Length: 458
Image 1: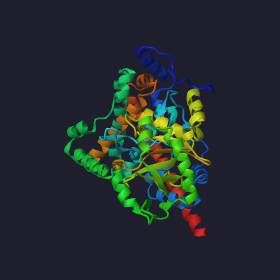
Image 2 (image 1 turned 135 degrees about the vertical axis):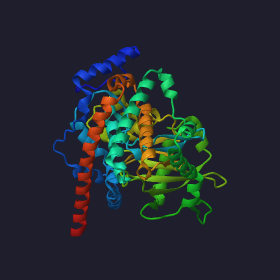
Image 3 (image 1 turned 90 degrees about the vertical axis):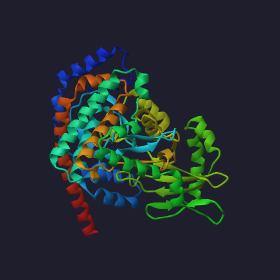
Image 4 (image 1 turned 45 degrees about the horizontal axis):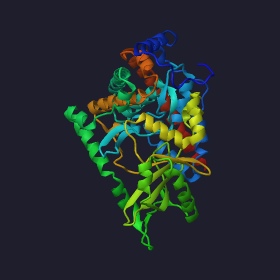
C-alpha cells in the first residue's frame, strides 16, 4: 500500500464499475491468499504489558485473571496482538469503517431510541478504517475458539466459519446494490427474524432477549444505588469492581459533564437539564477493557428518579497503534478535533443501524472518554453455551450484521466485487482462522504460564 493517506470518499462511479474494480484486485491480491498466515517476529505478551502500563495499576491483576479464564477469554482481550499480526499479512487494500474488535461476544442486544430491541455490534473502542477482511478474520477466529469453548468438534466450527463468511458475502452484495440512503436505513428486524428461526435457535434467542429486557436502567439503579443521609442517591461500593469517587473528582466530572452535554443531540441536551449529577463511581467492565478508566455517573431528577450513564476511557485504536493502518486524512483531522472519544462515538454512529441517543464524548485532563446509557436493555448471546445448530446460525447472524456495518462505507461495492459469492473467501478465511486459533491458544498458554511464574516468584 502507498504511504499516502487513502481517500475516504472515492470518486462517484456506477455500481458496475465499483464491482469490476473489486474483481480486478483479485489479480494482485488473489482471494486464496487470504489463507496465508504470515507471522514475523512477534511479542504478544510484550504488547499486553504495554497496554497494562496504561491501565489503572490496581486493576491489572483482575484483567489478567479474567483473560486467564480460557483461550476464548484471552482472545477477547488481545485485539492489539491480533492487529499486529494482521499487519504482517498482505491485505486487499480495500478500507472500510471497521469495528476493530469484531469477535462474537461483541455483538448483542440494546434498546433503540424507539424502545425496540436491536441486535448489532456493540463495542467500538478500537473502531477506525482498516481492510475489510481484518474484522472478518477476527470474527471467524472467535467462532473457532468459541466453538471449542462450547465443546463442539472442529467440523461444527469449520461449517460455522464457512457459513459466516458466505453470509457476509451475501449481505455485502445485497447492500452494495442499494442506494446509500437505502443502505443507511437497512437494519436487522429482530422480531421478524426470530419467528423464522428453527425451534432450537428461536428458543435460545428468546431466552437471551428475555435476559436483555430485564437489564434496564431502572433495575440497575435499584441494585447499584442507595439513599444517602442527605436524601440524595449514591452508588453502593463493592471494591474493586465499584469504588465511589472522591468529592474533588465529582466536582471535576461535573465540569466535564457540561462538555459532554454539548456533544449530544440538542433534544438529549435539553432532557439532561432535568437531571443533576449526584455521584460518580469507578466501575470495572469486560475482559480486555479491565483497567481502562470506566466510570458510572449517577443522575437524579427532582423526584429522585435515577439515570445512570457510563463513561469509558477511549484510547487510540489498535488498528493504528498495532495495525499501523494509515487513516484517511478526514479521519485523522476528525480525531484531532474531537479526540479519541469523538472517534468512538462517530464510528459507532456509522456502524450501528441505530445508536444510543445519549452517546457523547469529553476530553479529560489525563484521558479521553465517551459516554452512553448504562444497562439500557443491553445483553448478549453467550455463543460458547449454544448447541451446534443455534451456534452456527448465531455465527451467520453476526457475520450478516458485520456486513451491514461495513456496507455503510464508500468501498462497499468494491468489497462485494472482490469477495464475490463468498465460496473462495470462505475457504481461505476459514483456513486462516483455524491457523490463527492455534497461535492464540499458544499465546494463551504462554500468558498463563508467565503469570503463574510471576505469582510464584512474587
